[in-house]
Image (tube, rainbow, N blue to C red; front, side, top):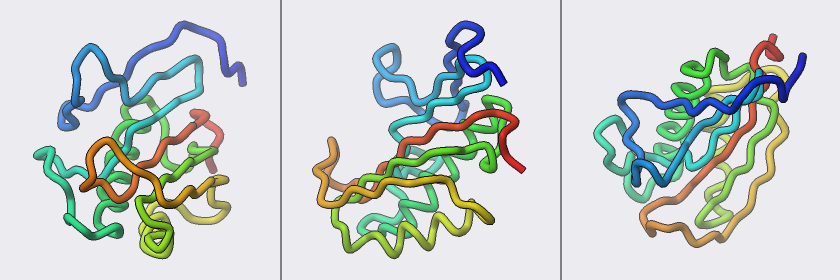
Length: 137
């Protein structure tokens, strides 16, 4: 695998609106490496998924993440690293339960940071990820 070969390519997903077009990117692909950031719990209409519910927000953000990694040519099994940020560390069990719905076997390494202030106070969870296309089983 040659991770850095090739130019950076921005990936978009039609049903995921970017908050500030031209000033924001959720996903880049460089060679076979995928970098995803800014995954929050919004539904297809752009509304908060499950206001006040960290499990529902986590499910929604993993659905968004899956859409980006698939648009980049990979699968959830290709994700090799997650960084999760929680508004309240007590949301950790809900986040972990949602993560179980999208990963199996060897879960990707994951940092979980709690008690974070987000750009919008209704967000309870935000995740960023790195994937290497073709690395999953």
